[in-house]
Image (tube, rainbow, N blue to C red; front, side, top):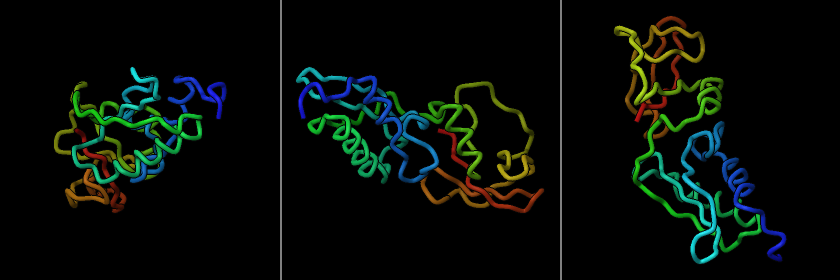
Length: 165
């Protein structure tokens, strides 16, 4: 592959951003806001900088493999992935599109960490099935470490809730 076949950083960022999250494939890495930057490093190699959703995330090896695959498809087989932990990822980095996709697939998106606090006086996460806030925690552990299971007392459905971090 010649240098002319290599996509520029802006296009690589789009392609890397389209990589689905392995634990929540309804959202992409761009939707989750885990990609910090995409560009050429000092040594001339394409570098993707990511921040994991939490330290020790078991999905990181699969995420990195997906990014490397995208880099190769973009003409940068020598590209690399670098993890940074500071500043830490928060759920505020999830895009509005990512929140919409999560809700459409039955996962209650987290509230804002730094934004105004939603006052619900004893009510829980909004049910993605019926919209009720008459919900209560059922388990602090969901399918992944970043999820909890919540029961809607209005429609009696359980659903995953992405924890606010």
